Image (cartoon, rainbow, N blue to C red; front, side, top):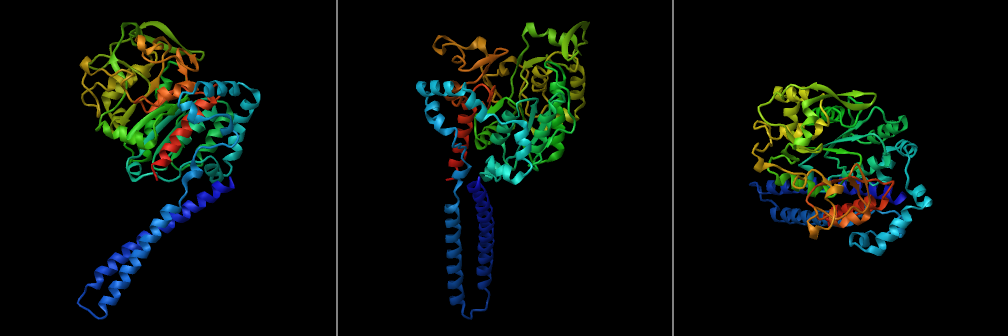
Length: 454
């Protein structure tokens, strides 16, 4: 930690010094222009001195750049690295993957890698040390990223370690983050989240928290609450991205920015024709009873829009103007109000708005423009029913981890395949069941991001 603190200090020192050098260069250039006034007394001597000074200053700046050592920001752990060779895992080395799985089931390893809410509360009592110790990137890695800030909504309810690792992986000082914590979350968990978010000016807890019930409107409301907070937080960000605590990036921030730029103002989210089996989700009324959502026998009125209801997913990549439409447009408000007593509205609301012609970044309603989860950039998910041998027609290889509600919770054997996919984020990860899947992925992404600085 001492070395990391030293690096942090050196980075700040060199960045300030570089700024001073740049100011000196600009001043030198201005002074050189002033030399070419009518006064010609000793002009040659003054010009030569100015040229020499400029050369020296440029040399100093180049040396400053070469002295900055970003290696301390790599994701390394002296206790973990000897137990797992992440390079071999990413190369699909069967022996190394098998060895890592045996290590992860030992009680000593689980005890060593588990970070509790109490520990985060203790660490965040000193924010500067926390950010250095946990190796957060506290400066933009490129002008391109700095000029294209993003806004994130993250909805969480448990697994504080998963959340903090996700935040660290996507954190950049030019971005903005809203964290929605389920009201049902344990008090210590909530306190730890407060501690973590308080260490960053651009990370806030949602101003309005919901009690989340799986499949109910509350999940959508949580994202809308963060949309509102982020929209008022800054006018600079370009795209909105919503995540949950078990998501993780599979691209660097620079790659995310470039992918979003390539959309040329369009949104990217799953939106396709509604399967007949799902129509009951919005043709019948649903309500929350004793913490669970249940179907009633009451038929709903038709939707208040002149278009079909489309099927999609909960996770979206949408431009800032889409968020403005959701928050301010009367048509959006009518659809939102109509949707709040349906089942899993997050899986049709965004998809339907994306097909309305006046929505910024939308696409036409024709089925030929349908976008499946495979083609959307928003999320990579392995569904159990589509796994198998790709040579025999399966959509993707078998899950190397385990399944929850038919969704793969990734294992180390999924990483190599995952990094070849076009999506920006993947779901699901769990540090409690496959620590190395998250560790090796973050290690790879951080190294890739820092390598771009050289």
